[in-house]
Image (cartoon, rainbow, N blue to C red; front, side, top):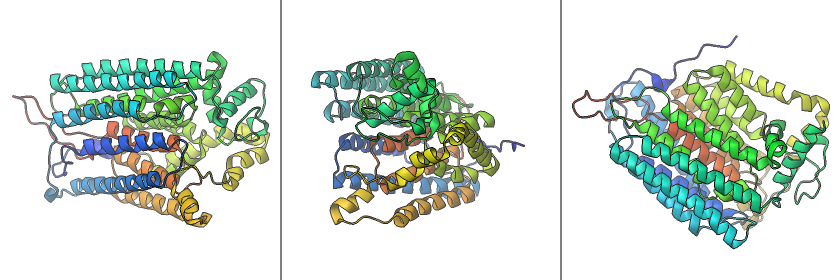
Length: 489
């Protein structure tokens, strides 16, 4: 029997006592996130020790943020009035988001991404993304000044059109990218139509892996319609990205806003977060290379939206689809299991649902599936152009860290997240940030992690910004708006 939904902590009775972040705190978060993605864009495909150092510093910053967010929320729950309350003026949040989009536009045209396009083609796609970012900057600024969300909503719609236009050019100009991800997804989609088992197929003309499908089966199944209907799985990734962006936008729009303002700050932040998912630095490479992390982003965004709306069965389905698509999402289940809003019963049922989704492929050939998705990845050689602490140890110290050491780093981070979430019962936003922290550490100690893996971490942070509660100032002449006890931004 499915357990009843527990009231999410960030919908608890509003209490005084929570220390608000200082006004520019969301600006600091967005600045660090944008810098991180600019560095990730530059990292494809090159190893530099300073890139690893930047990632490590960002991991420390993220860790401090999630711990501080839990402490602030705990103080509010315990009615610790010494924590104080500081309300950020709306123009700070709007200004920080708008400035971030201007910075993103500059990075789009100054940091060259990895691409197979000609210089002219590459410049055009990057300028489209830059222009979309500037449109979002103007839309957010106008919404802030006019105290009405409509300009930001229009800007988000125009940015979505720009994203699709640039993606169409990328797919048209590079119809066969030289990456094994695209080759395996294309041929797996063809194999599904022919009744073939992707784990028993070999891939023709793959520049990398040729005899294994290293993802779980729903990566191929959910993206196959792009190949079937439009000739390229990347079209499915474009659609999935837009659906994920829509979920993030709706996450910011969910619920009754505090105060009487026509510009709810959570809606403004959610619109900004959704827009950033469309234009982050390196988006052109993400689209061109057919990296599949947007599928996971959409699943996690859908999960968060359904949890916020108390629709737990759809939330479980979204999460199960993600679990049946890529292996490493399984590390998030223990964190969600100890969070009372989701709970261990739903976590177990979600894992079981994912297992049922994957069962046909396992029954067809258990040995092939285990080889492709487990043992091959464990035995896979380190890629020396990846930017991780593992690769840094090999390149700089000529030392290969043992598996137990890297595993211990992930387990310690996961254990810390489980203990914190269990004891402090944070809101949805901070749970998402703990999930981002676990994945970031897993990336850093991995034998290979590239732009796309770090992009998913950034996406989780952006989803958390849309999920967070923000203090809302009342209009003149109205009663002061109460301050939610869970704003952790």
